[in-house]
Amino acid sequence: MASGTMTDAVWTKYRNAVNSYSDTVANEAVIWKRVTSNVDRWQEGMAKIYEDTSISCLVAYNTFRTWPVDSRTDTGIIDKEYCHLYLNKAYLEAQGWLTPNGQLDFNPDFDRFILDGLTYKPAGDTGTAQANTNPLFIIVILEREETSTGDKVRP
Image 1 (cartoon, rainbow, N blue to C red):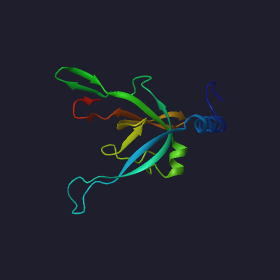
Image 2: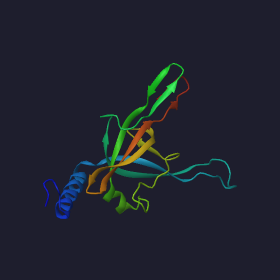
Image 3: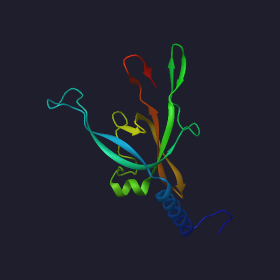
Image 4: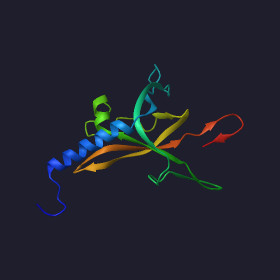
């Protein structure tokens, strides 16, 4: 075996250790507002119907630049990046939340995530924590959704 080459047994041990660690630390409850319908009864318009689903994950708060989510305005650039979720793929698969090709089965245009009472929209997703050729986690980058309160708009 070449120096630095890992066997399938070592990859399996690594994957099991990472999943065990995830069971311990990835326990932040986030509400995933999953859109189940986005048309009204006449099959037109945008009458979105959401299903609230509690999802367990590890939340990372702006620890490093994970995705380019800057918004250009007339007065400058606003950095709307705020946090990202680490979602264990074994957990997602057990819940039936993966597509046939192993991606999170969500609607990035309409789904929202509620964390600490604030609403976030997904700004991107990618696999991470690779074990051999398979990512063990999916990162979902979240951008705080702008909310109008009547007297101000806050990102």
